[in-house]
Every structure is written in structure tokens, then in C-alpha cells.
Amino acid sequence: MKAFYAEEQKRHDPKAFLSSGAPQPNPEKPERVERLLAGARSAGLTIERPKNHGLGPIAAVHTPEYLDFLEHIFARWQRIEGASAEVIPNIHPIARDGSYPASAVGQAGYHMADTACPISAETWNSALWSAWSAVEAAEAVMAGAPSAYALCRPPGHHAFADIAGGFCFINNSAVAAQVLRGQAARVAILDVDLHHGNGTQGIFYARPDVLTVSLHADPVRFYPFFWGHADERGEGPGLGYNFNLPLPRKSGDAAFLEALASAFRRVHSFAPEALVVALGLDAFEGDPFGGLSVTTPGFARIGEAIAGLGLPTVIVQEGGYLCDALGDNLTAFLTGFGGKKG
Ligand SMILES: [Zn+2]
Image (tube, rainbow, N blue to C red; front, top):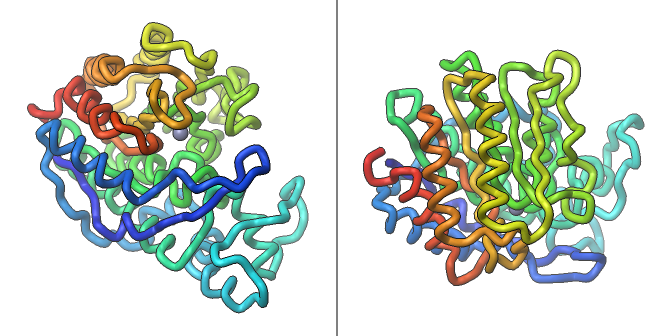
């Protein structure tokens, strides 16, 4: 199996975020890339650099005003006297039914859901290359590869069509799914990150051609709080094409695999022609967020189970934070999936 990654993806280096109101070091560190590259290589994957695919495949799932914001906000922020070094919002529209703000501070609040996605000088470029890795992996699968892995960093699944959040700017899994739609009539996205894929759900919520399925820690007391509940099933023509499987905290491998079997039944009945796996590794028991107590052998079983669907598959990296086993967990997943034969 091929893996796609560009070194520009490492340059985004967020410094801080607020956790329960307290400033903390931002856990979405560039070093994650080194661990994930080592993990992919250990599974026998070869790393290739993606091409520059332009804004087209990104603008297919994000709004023009949002992309313009991401590209220019850091330079605009620099001109505000006394502003923070990184773009961090401090005011948000309670409902998004007011006017679109003209100011940098207003737009930061409009386009950023929380404080976990600070924007600095390299953020836009890193996010672009992360998305292009996803595009390249999708194109490899469309060209006949049974599967491909996109080492997407920064991650993407909390990014809506026009909102950044939770370390995410461009929704790489959604970009990959939309590229696959160029060839496949129906695409399923299976999100196994610890956190609900709220941005991905939002982007496809009213669409019946992309099924979104997410397994995650129950948002009743966990990020992203407002989304990820079992009664969110889609809307309009998309009603029934969103499936959430919230799990109790610390539930472990067996509960995760059982929920995965439910997810597969929904995927089977949808009969997709291609699959995107939004691969978070933060369900791991030793991850700093460690909410679901999945083990390293558990990731191998998850990979093996997903490979059993027998679908052309794009694996897109989402979360998974610095801990000793981060690379091993990726190796386990990819080896279970069949990394050496793909
Ligand atoms: Zn996560």
C-alpha cells in the first residue's frame, strides 16, 4: 500500500489551547508526523509526496469565504494592535443567523468553533498539503489500488464546510470522499476516531450519496458535545444516511468491535462502491485523550475487520496524540488491514 505525505504538513505548530478553560500546550504536535511515518514504514508502506492539486477538490466541500479566511487571516491578524501571536477566537455568534462580519476578530469567531485550532504563519500551507495527500490517496484508489493511506496532518474531521475546530482546518476525509464520488455513485465514510466526526457529518448531513458513520466516545460529557448523539440521522434527502454509535468511556476492544459490526451492517445495506476510513488512533488506552481504552492488538483487529468489507479504501489519518505506542498503533491497524499486500 502507498502512503502520501508532504513535509510542509509538519510546519503548522500550534502552541496552546484551552481545556476546561485552562491554557494547555496544544497536543497536535508536529512530532506526531515522525511517529506516524515510522508506523507506516513498519507496516511495509512506501511514502510518496502528493502533487499540488489546487483548490478545486477542497472547494468541493468548503465554502469560498471560509477558504479565503484560512488563507489570509494570519496576515490580517498581525495588523491588529496587541493581538495574540496565533489567531484564536474570543467571540462567536450564538446562532449563525446574523450578518457575516467584516473584521478579522469577527471572522475568527464565525469560522472557528473553539480554541483548539490556532492559526499561524504555516497553518494554511500545511492544511493544503494535508488535503492534497488525501486527494492523492483517493486518486490512487480510483486508478485501481485496492487501498491507500493519507498521512493527513493537520487532521480534518472536526472541520465543517465553513468552520475550523478541534485541531482541524480542511476536512481531509470529506475531500477524499468527494474525489471518490467522481467515480463511485455511493461512498461511505467510517470514522473510528475517539471523537465524533462532527465536521464530516455536517458536510454530508443532507446528502444521500455519502453515508457517514462514526464510532466515538459518547459526547454527553465529551468533545464535541453538541454532535455525535445517536438521534442525529441526517436531514432532508440525507435523512437516514448518518449513523452515530456513541460508546461509554473506557469501554475497550470488545465493545468497539461490537459497535463496528453494527456499523458494517449499515454500510452493507448502503452498498457503497468505495470507503473512506477516518482513522483516529486516540481511542487507544495510553493516548493522552484515551477515552475508549482500545489496545494495540485491538487496532489490528479493527483494521482486519474493516478490510473484510472488501471495498476500495482510502485511509485518512485523523487524531492520535503523542504516546509511546502511537506509531505501533498505526502499524497494527495497517498490518491488520493488510498493509503489505495492498
Ligand atoms: Zn480525536
